[in-house]
Structures are given as structure tokens and as C-alpha cells.
Image (cartoon, rainbow, N blue to C red; front, side, top):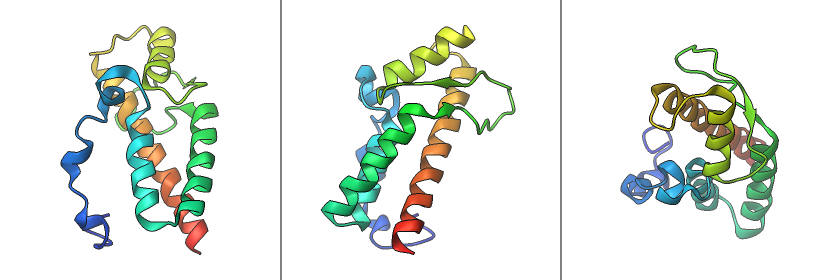
Length: 129
């Protein structure tokens, strides 16, 4: 967005989100949700931000991931039933048999990140008409 849209996205230091992966190092909130909340808050007022974030969280909790699979690995889809990285990734690892450091798990999370980003863009486009 920094390259395509410019301001205010070109003002956000990407280093601020370096620890988002792996639930900020503690398996907490999925990193894509934290970054998404920051992006939404950058362009929306508080009321709209709260509304969109609530919608995003509800969607994430029930969505089957990964629909988008960048490496076409035919990975199993799982529902996180949570906002936590630990639960989302854990459900996937239990269903797939892949370990946390396996490239397939990393590919799965890349697909989830892409899907969350797409959802945020869809919501913002709809909101801003």
C-alpha cells in the first residue's frame, strides 16, 4: 500500500510489525489481525475502525484457511475458532501432521496472510465506496 497508495501508508515503519509472526512470539493474536487492525485504524475513524475490526475478527474465527495456497500444495483447510495464532496454527498442524517449522506450515500462514489482507481491502473498499 505504501507504493500504490502512498500517504499515510508510506509513513508506517514496517519494522514495527516485525514480531507479528508467530503471534508476536507468544502464540497470541494472529499477526495478520494485529497488522490489519493498524491498517484499518490508519484510514478510518474510531467508530468505523471498531466496526470493521469486529467484522474481521468474526470472519477470521470461522473462515476455513487456507483457501489461497501460494504453492498449490493442496493443504487441508481448518477453522481456527479463535483469533489466536497458537490455535489457528495448532488446528492446522493437528489436521495436517506438519510441524511448526515445516515449509508447508509456513506456506499455509502465507496463504492466511494473503486472505486476511484481501478481506481487509474488500471491507475498506466497501466502507469507503
